[in-house]
Image (cartoon, rainbow, N blue to C red):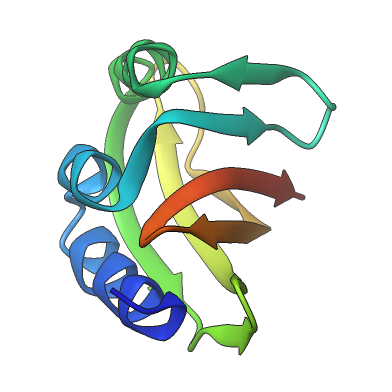
Length: 114
């Protein structure tokens, strides 16, 4: 898959809240994730663990808006706007930008800014 095809597929899956499927279909086994606080983790297993904890912390995703991808070479970025209710907290949300690097048809790096 090209970088643009991966970006487009990621939007389709994430819009359906199929985050795990997106990761396992589009990401390399040894993908590196860097959060906005600069904490890094490596590998699909680590990302699965992170997602399980994150999903377990919420009551409901009310809405998720995803921008069109900005593609440049082997990089693409997406802007996400989340409206979520976390357990024991009032409804709220945030905006973030994900930047992704693609190599050999798989995402090898994801980095978030929020």
